[in-house]
Length: 520
Image (cartoon, rainbow, N blue to C red; front, side):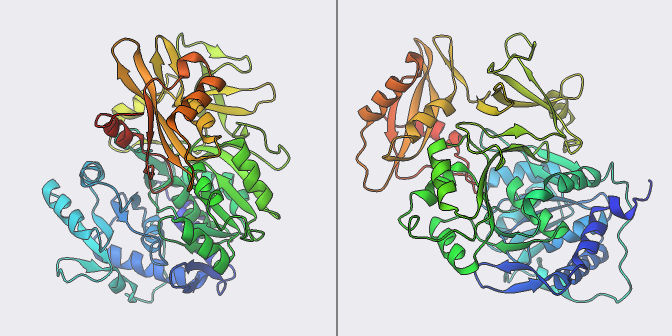
């Protein structure tokens, strides 16, 4: 194994970065207002690494984190990078089945859990026959658990040295692919790939105060944490998103950057406080994770009097953004911007496999990048299926480019369904429904129909005070879209549409719900 040069070791990069302006604030707990300096985080990260080493953690091992955001959450992340131990974050609000599935794949040697979920973790690990050490965040009376607070004690005063590693083969972290359409897979990124990711996206983050709602499980949350440790930023650690919390923290802490999905942005825009809230402190609002309504994007941009709204498209497998809009490009309806220069791409016709080189013709997007994943953890078959014979990653997204190179996401191939042979992209119908002034959000799925294959069914969340009817929505779709997009499956109004913790609509639950209800 070759020893990494300091600049190729993610842990060393973090240690060096945190020595710059050591007394400056690095992070802030949104709930308590407590701040912590860069040098303090550096020292505590080293202490956690020493304790992990003392407890038997070694290069190549895996640790799993299942934590809410706090000033203590990043410490095992730092420690893992220092030791060459792969970090695999999970989300506190995942199901027991998902825990069992992913822990069975990762086989961690140590887990760091919030007290609210630690007993479930212990039960799952026991069922799997895994004797991983359990470190709890919070107070527990179970003597079998270690407490993270004990890891902050000084073990020795010798100068700390990062563990030598090969940056091209050592996994730095394992993030989950989106679980909104099925069981997630563990996406591996090595130290080298991670460093290239940092270099590629630091332009977004440098010198900004970031408000982070997403947990480490989500690409946006992990990216914000990683950038906080490797460039000059301040991170505001917030609990899972709630609209009232956004306004509370915006007023109290004046964040300069936030990343949300369009669904979360709609909640912010439609809140009663929106028009009366000063967001002039916000320099960058990044949208990602779904298609964006142009009118909503324009409303948000108008309200950010000194900032910029960026619409982006990213993938965990690529390590971050693939496209983004810029101030120079301006707001262009329906696009997520242009493909970042260092990322290679091609469009492939889904019917015959030919390469598409003409504008405005949809095909599956294939990508290559130096920051692209090394593979799916413990799943060589899934890795092989995700790549073509030349190593291109098949995104599963149906995309078209216009004459100027602007990218338009048509839909996920897995979500596209057929009515009488016509392909229907739910995102297009959702875009029309969301344009109605009485609608906050919508989700369209295809339901089985013995005569035509599938028909569209729309789930809709009304705006507060709205009395929009199912017939109004049906008429709107009929007026705006082709005949095969008509809502033949009906309309269902819901008080709320369930989102993942990162703000994406969970369509699997809606498909289950569709089997038990009678639409309008």
